[in-house]
Length: 466
Image 1 (spheres, rainbow, N blue to C red):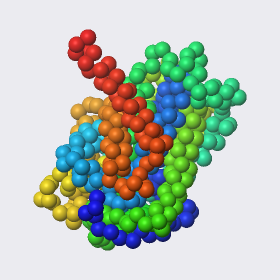
Image 2 (image 1 turned 30 degrees about the vertical axis):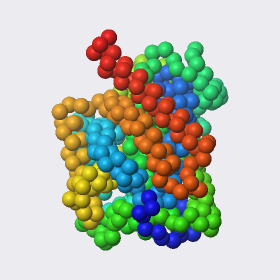
Image 3 (image 1 turned 180 degrees about the horizontal axis):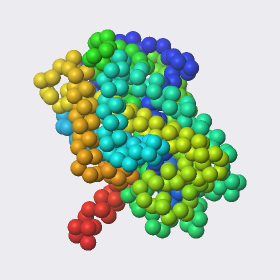
Image 4 (image 1 turned 135 degrees about the horizontal axis):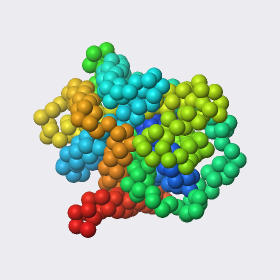
């Protein structure tokens, strides 16, 4: 990295000005893991599996922080750093981002819930309408980062307090006890994993306890566009229709590792850790625990929960019966809007990842100035792909979500190892991850690798050669 230009490291901002990027990453996980997968597992198998959510969030916290470390230090995305190391990696990230995320399970889930509220039976067409609407929001928002951040702050500020109040009102004391026991792995008649739990579904929930897949890597874009650390010198992606054009650079800079600069970097590092812990880990943990508790206390043991995301509708019905019907409808609307926001944010993150990696893979045939156009090209390519998937009949929301999540768990296995390697070999020694952070990254690498290998063997090789 000695070929990077040297620039001045800006002074660290106070904590109150740092909140933002983690809301986007939290929003990426709210729809899939928090609203669907963990409550689904809890409604069918009890709260004894909830320890997995906290493990998944904790691993993702450390993965995300290493991604932020690189962006803070070099003011560029980790993908640029990866491409310097291995020229073929942009092709891997294009493939491992596009294939898992073209499955529109989150949008289909949102459409299913909205269809239930408004009496619409053909929800696949509603899902298509939602996909197109998301495309227009992202295309017409003047500054993409601000559009996505503002929307997620609104949804989270409404959704999390609502879920908290409903859990407080509806959960019995025994339910809270079961939740506390589940945090350490004790469930009704089992410890850690119940009999009959599909390992693929559990792996999917682990991957989506947070952002999941390559979406974690998009945190480096959001840190950069927020202007944190050396990201101050990078431009932002603006709408090609309504935005004011900004100079966008994908190549960052480095700072001299002087005593003062190391002190300043450590100040940045401390603040971003606090911000990410509060918004991503703490808020994410509370949300998963409360939504799983709510699902358990209202629908646990109901036979109809097995089919798709009907447990969310069962949950809303139970809430309406215990309180008033309007509250059940409100719950469905909040859940649907949360899912909508997640799918929209997924489109933003994947479009950023794809556009930059297409540029890196082009071997200088494309220019940096092409990034905004590339972004909107891949955005609408994903939307069209999602529409085709829905039209040909893949409309079961839960299976779409699980399929995407299993693929994304393997992607996390790959990028957690790559990120640790990048930071250990590209950053100045004074700002590299310490032994504790390194240990957590290695543990995450082995964890996702082990579960992914088992599911791939169980689902594919076992059926072929067993």
